[in-house]
Length: 277
Ligand code: KIV
Image (cartoon, rainbow, N blue to C red):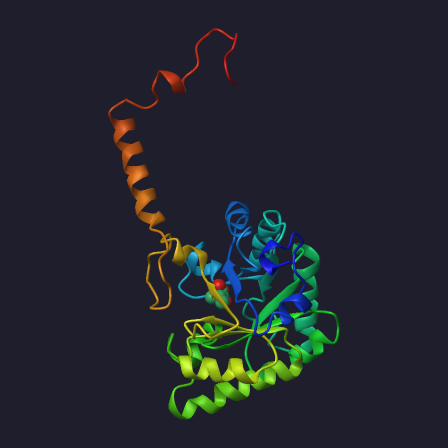
């Protein structure tokens, strides 16, 4: 049976087994209705901390809290039946110590039903990832551009060019050594993504990386054209739902002002018989 035809949600071990196979399809989701739309098509649905910017209008992901991740994680879980859910650990919830990470990761798994957590960082997170994976918490790693480090990286820049290549390679090796079941490669040169994919025994999930990765992920609001504050080069638009919504809201506003909405079919008479509630 092909992975896309599978009826039950894959587990991290199933994702690991997809290394080098049919590319993994991954998208973010933050709400139940969008989770329902992604579920039939995706192997992994990520409740990304990008929700801070995409849904809550924040300038970065740094203000996202555990409570926000748990609220959205639980909502997404209610919309999934066949895709695996991963929930991001927010900034400040895992960096202090492996035990802080374990406490918060266990809370995320327990309170959302996620199969795994994702956290940002390479070499510096090796000990933490090992601590979690040895204590039954599957971890998806995230290296390259790590948006929670925006203030030290100095912007949303491509990572791993030139002399910086060795650093990103070291990060990739470290998270694989530590037991991560997959790793997101964000905004790294395509040749570096291909080298990491060839060397690592775990699936690489690219975003602004390479078609040669073991899978791809996009922010769902980017690819649907719903988030328009800015558009990263890698965020291919598959629809322009923002424009469709704008036209629909403008039409509604015009009809309300012209008193042509509600029309007779949208209002109720006195008679009860045959009337819809
Ligand atoms: O927060 C997020 O949505 C992410 C993906 C872009 C990988 O980390």
